[in-house]
Length: 250
Image (cartoon, rainbow, N blue to C red; front, top):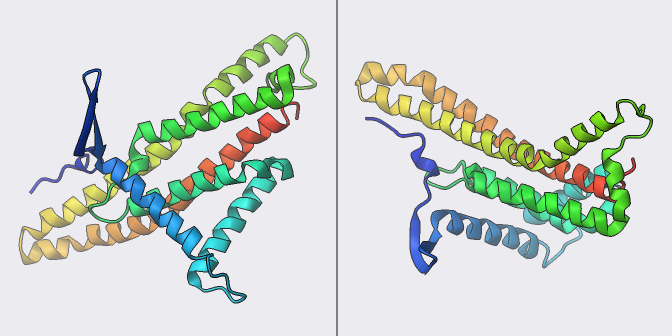
């Protein structure tokens, strides 16, 4: 029995909606999963805190720990001025975290394994940094590309490198999340396919399937860690980029 590890990333139309310029606009499994993620986050943050208690329960503790974790990340990376962006960073972190974790559930869909989703998030961060940077600092935002203390002889080359590095941020920001989730899920699917294939050989095959089964368990635990780390990395990079918009001369 062959198992296609790429099949899990395919987007399927669920409800056709309209046609614009020859393009079908439909409600897909990806859109459904994103809706579920938003609803789950809303239930956690609103439902768990609607009846706040002095001694918090499990859900309230999860909500408070999530809030404090992201708040401390924003303060440490972008300073107290960066807290104005806390709702934005918190929303990104929670959405990516829930998307990564839910994607590990069998027969679910990992929206962060779609490059279009991660690119959209990365471009959103990029344009917020550019727009806010110019709005807050004016042309002084361009000081970001002129490091202090650099000899004038090599300054033009450094400016070009800094500019290219800045323009490439959306690429690295999006590909890092996309590639990690894609590679991890493909690896899990491959080892799961080994279990199915070996089990088809009878009793001896069952013994042979023990190793890939153990690998699936280990990889699932690792993917849970990666799911959190990738959400954290995306959030902290967002904070660092926002800090450049707030303090471009630093």
